[in-house]
Figure (cartoon, rainbow, N blue to C red):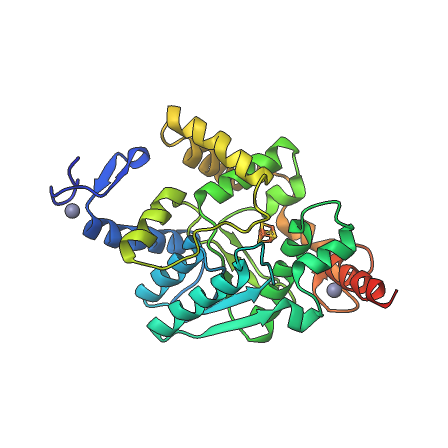
Length: 313
Ligand code: SF4
Ligand SMILES: [Zn+2]
Ligand SMILES: [Zn+2]
């Protein structure tokens, strides 16, 4: 297989784009694509201050690398979840993020959940869920809360995450199977902030396949954590990814078209309920001030209180 651009040996083949590229051309092509999507969806500009949520995985670190190479002002945010799982998962991923930032002279903000809220994620989950389930619900809630708080308090214009096309397509499939309209109306490359509590959120990699991101990290020599979070095993999202991969194997481009047709349908008003209307149903949590749809306090503050209560008993 030869590189479509220069004719030398291809390193990455992308059937869905009918494109094969050598390492050098691929490393130039991918950031160009990301730049195109940043503009297309009006995510941010070079005068914006960007906060990238990094987990130590290939997608978030590659995203940080790409935005930095493209000349954006981007700092990183690492959230220490306190997950060990026998592989020192959190410790290792934090080290990799710190190393990445130090090598490039970039600023990394670190929030440690246990230091801030008294307990690491697994202990919090144990107390709220009584070991009935994985800690993912508690973890997701906590991460969203912290990301929004830090971005807002530190005055960032936009928060970016490393969700790739496979992540977005899997989420979309999950939300479609249950017709979770509230989630569907908010899913997309960009979620506007509300000028008050909720920061603008963007996903610059939402149209990039996971295997392209893996190739990018590898070819750029980015050191990332190979292991998944020990709690990820058996997650529904992984099952949906697998289903979509089967579809993609038979029909190259199926994943991308599933996601893009959704965005198009939404733009054409298929979803009558606009995010603004969902937002109008929100109010500020009396405890932390972040927007919530829950009556009274937000789900996060209720969880923290429950944890504190359990601690006392
Ligand atoms: S798999 Fe679950 S516990 Fe692990 S990082 Fe993801 S949401 Fe958190
Ligand atoms: Zn080439
Ligand atoms: Zn709250």
